Length: 274
Image 1: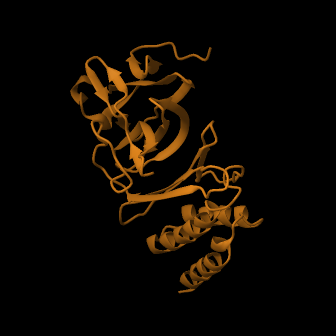
Image 2: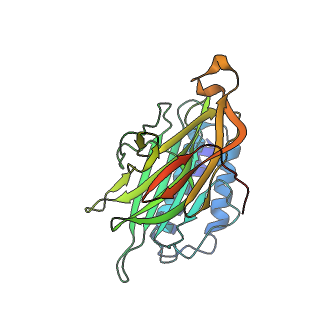
């Protein structure tokens, strides 16, 4: 009972204090650091959910603050914070791991508006999903597959502003996924995930998704504004062909290169930094 009362008091204090603030309080980083430490160190699902509710309350206030595009929390290894090079989009994301039910992804997309207008904030959350992420369709806010995004770059195509995102998905127990995604906004300001933009041979995908063994590691990174380089994945043995829980890197690299308005796949590239 005592842990429940403690987390309830934290939640109430944060709800009445920080959530209504327009700027991150001086003690907010320390409070968040303590909450994330408790989140990782606690093994009871009900306690984790309460702690996570407190984290969400703090961040709900923070993303509305005047300093969200200029401020960055330090010493929070479990909170993703990325700002686009054009300073028009910020993504804050984390995941909640649970023992007895599927975990969840939480993500804020903060989109800067013209001077004098409030930023647009999109709050997304979804349970872990073991299903494959499709490459032949767009997604939206209501059917988002869930991922942790760790890098992004802005582009303008046909006068439409978009951002290429790099992400990772741990939603399957046996398979990890890395994702190259495209984020844009409809004329009605709705989120759109995906753009028919990634070409290999006669096929053009809305995104690319790489599946590999959960105990393996795969690199996926921007080499430049016009190049995305990544490990080439192969089965551990011929008998495991097409079973991606037995796939991993073979120490060669492939790349998408942006050429003539489209991302073209090139197999076997020199991935060393120039």
